[in-house]
Length: 115
Image (cartoon, rainbow, N blue to C red; front, top):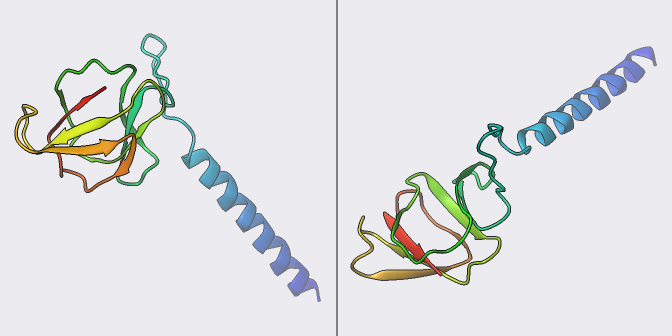
């Protein structure tokens, strides 16, 4: 009986430790005091794990920007209506309308514009 109680207690402690570790892994990335980024506003690109923010664009400017090479998800949190992606580095050629919430294969696109 004591062994069963001990095993149950160890299992509960292990599950609690995993839950705490998982929560810590989802925390926002560290930011320097001189350059704070609000990852949940503007347009944010995330890595292919859909958790790690890679780049943030606070407001659309209609200019051609490099597409983050390892990005796998984009979220237009605010101020964006549409993101247009290109397979070329200079926003030329065939345009792919991605909207404001889209996943894709890392490296699929080379540049983008947004409005």
